[in-house]
Image (cartoon, rainbow, N blue to C red; front, side):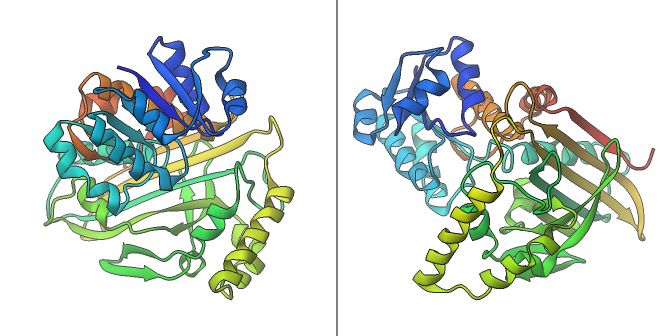
Length: 380
């Protein structure tokens, strides 16, 4: 069984190298073979120019195709896997078109694993851990009021006036600022057209407490079921969102104002222009340390008083191993690939696993990737 790893961008390399160094049968595919050779040429000569038809020719039943390519490749490659009786893994969110493949994958006994990078990925693992711990606690009561928040962000290790730096093209970040979000605040559904309309402050329980700006992103509500919340639980707050350095909204206020005015093809062109400018002005320098902060929090209250409250908190930064972002995205992907090969993942379209054994193993590995990883109990 061969791991067909497609894509050797910045966020792909540590996980890919880990699999090759562990002795797995790995073939590497990338649109630029020069970049792939720079990334892993010291470990393997099995490097191919990415081409879907060429991949289809060599893909065998039981192989695992890994897509670390742009998102529009995930579904076509997953469909190719179904046609060849192969498995599929990506770190990206499950698109509706991917979810539509679930029944076929189940019928064929094939795994199409997604959402197993950093965010989504490690955040899911932390959420599953906290929910399981809460269920098993003496404080568990279906009548409790529950508040869940999950905030993740890549930020500069050394703060800059712009309050942000880019690891890759800024276009994705800028497009996300135009996206609406849906979450639960104070027992009611909160729909927000733009992130800056729902900015709030978050005190992260790091070894040295630190305050960040946070905002909801995407649609949080489907994750209530994904995180195994019972339908009858009383949910006061449920927010998955983005974390930024304090002062970010002030530094970006002119960007927000302009993005609000952009429409149609001309707007898209201006967004690309802004992206190119920011890439020139605010990209990480080679060897510069990035930082990733992730806080997943679950609190249960009775009559307004906390009866159970824990935060899974992670702080990681770039070091001699490379960027924090790259290892936190790609190492979990590599763990999921091994779980697929070991038949530890159920068939069908699935996100990060919630199996307790896999949670313990994966989060144990995250403990080696991050400089700080801790479950903080706020009531002890």
